Image (cartoon, rainbow, N blue to C red):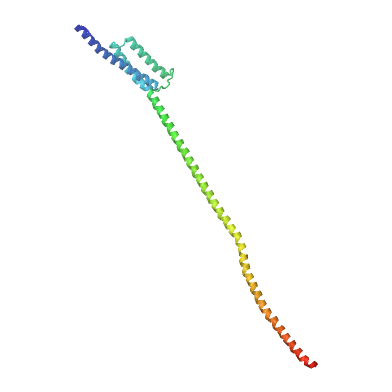
Length: 216
């Protein structure tokens, strides 16, 4: 810091002018940036509306000696030519994306990828669950079929065994009947055979006895 009063004042004045000039230059840059952004995003009407404001800001900066008047004229002519070339088709604008929009698009793509992966996981899980249910159903059907086959084989086995037992049950009463018949027949036949034989023998004996005295 200088010691002389006038030098001190000059430093303070320069600082004040520097701040004012920096504000003016910042405004110029901001207006030009808005115009270029409108051109880059292919907003021709907005660029045409901004062009007079850009010219006025450049003229004010040149009048205050913030920028040189030739520098202001060059900027004005360059911006006007750019707008006319875009309108005539000489200059083809490829829409530029700022970092914010690029980051937003990346985040959107990442979200879509996560959702797609989630849906794929849910689909695979549903398919696995359905396959598991189908396997359990097939297992139950196989068990039921095995049980039905076992019951059927048991019934057929019982049906085959029943005719073997039935004749035996029928034969035993028949055998008993035959033995009873035989005993009855034998009982009936024996007395009948004995009685006539006894009668005959007695008759023969009486005849022989009767004949013997006659011969004497």
